[in-house]
Length: 386
Length: 139
Image (cartoon, rainbow over all chains, first blue to last red; front, side, top):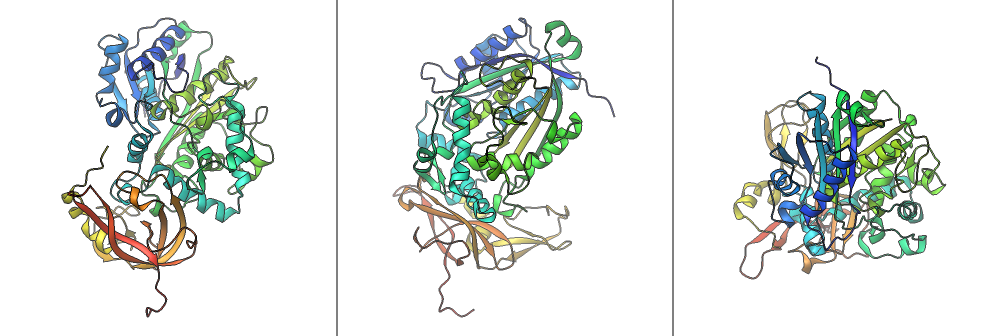
């Protein structure tokens, strides 16, 4: 088998996550793309892979690669969209990684962009519901939140998990995000506020849900020779893994685990030659509180059924190993859907470089980013090393 | 935005939507629902239609308040995962039951109902929903 080339992150660019009424999809992406290019020392990129879920539904725009290259003035480089619902960002990073690891290109931009706030909330929900099985889930009226709620109810019943234990997730995420200048929701919340928030799909409440966010993120990936010339702090992409599980959740072997995360992480841990216990910092995909809890177990940070209790008793906070979602996670950093996976990798890379502008995980050597598409129908896990 | 109902698309899946017809793998005996052309356990393509039981019990549910387009009049919509008597699990909407009555473990049975429509003159999508099992019915 031919050997993969080493791939490094040499440039990072992010926009603030939030409601950018003054910026369109192309404006957001251009801001992130040019920040990343400058961060990498004004390099010429050879290709672009962009993660996005809803431009077709909400912005009437397909052919996103060509569209963004044109508006960002990136020349005539090859460019296309990677789509795996809310897992599009991770899929874009994996695709870009492969382009450099294969030796086809030396410098590739991977990005993610999502523009949701031009649409009404109902229309955003309509667009996001396309992540589910169209003919056997969405057809029956299942929204994205309701499918997550089914998993949440099942998990809470099976492991006797309380509302207060679940609420600890959004409380911690908001606390972390309050120090992150890129975050969408920079305010703290208490247990009463979470527990009394509006029910969207019982038992799932508004404060269990990530917000509707706009945002764009970009990374410059480079081969080893190029990376060494560009920066003193290249971050190695040490392991990657991705997997799918039944898109129709009812037919899955398990409803209390996301098998795609387990399979993706096993592959990434093996490739990076690390164990879950080696991870200093993790950014995990908590579109809803229940996913945050499941991720801790599926990634090997907690035993099955114990994550909520560990969290409630004070684990996974800044200073712990791993520190989970110092950015505030999807819950409070925000969830610019197809960009989220790229934000996560960027945030972990910044932690390893030591220049993350929010809560710092000091001395972090190994970090992990986990991104999910649908209710665990797709998952990617990317492990970075300093 | 309007969710477009395509009669042809529903017609193609009619046996599953109207009769809970899945496929049984002749090689490893797995049951595929929704039906798909290859067994996901053993990759065999030697499959035969099988009518799934129309009774089962509820193993999880949610009460959806923010219903999608075409489902506003059904709010709150109760959606569940039903484990049929042969162990196959299906996603289904619940009917003839209130938010207060719904319970995990509840015995339910399939009944043909309207799922959603597309305005006064548009097509109507029908399929099976599940309701609490009527006790007097012989087993």
